Length: 223
Image (tube, rainbow, N blue to C red; front, side):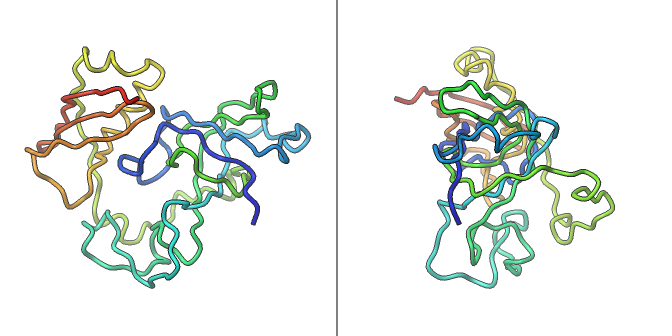
C-alpha cells in the first residue's frame, strides 16, 4: 500500500471530528505526493460530483486488534463486533469517506490539488486512494442501519455570540457551527457545568452544553 496524498483539514485534533462524513460546509484539500502530481491521472474526474477517499487511521494504529469495540453511539459501554462498526481500531487501520468534489486546482503550487466538502478526517491524514462515487451502485436508500439507528444523535442548537464568532475566519464559520451542532462531546459526558475545548484550524473553541443548547463561551487563537 502506497500513500498517495495527505488531507489538509481544519481538524487538528481528534476531539470534535464528525462521526461520519457529509457536513457540507466543511472544506478540506487532498494534496498529492510528488510522484502522483500527474495531470493525466485526474483526467475525467471533474465529471463526478462526489468521490470516495480511502485513508489511514494514522492515530489509531495498534499492534494487536480486538474482535469487539465500544461504539460511542451506544454510550461507550456496550461492546459490538468490530466488523459491525466503523471504529478506527481495526485489524487494518483503513477509513472510507464519501465527500463532495468541489474543484480540482491544476495550477496550484503542489497541484493538482482536490478540494472537497464533507470530510470527517484529521489534518495530515495519509490517503491511500480516491475513487469516483457512483450513485446508481453506491447509494442504497432502502438499506437497514443495524444498531446504529437504535440511538439517535440529536442536533443541538448553537449559541455563538457574535463577538466570539468574529474571532473565527469567515470561511470557517459555517463549518464550525455545523460541527458543534452535531454535539462533539463523548456520548458518556453530559455535565452542564463542564467546559469543553475543541481545536479547529488555528483556534480553540470553548463551549458548554445544557440539554439541547450548546453555548460557545470562548474562542482562543493558538500560536
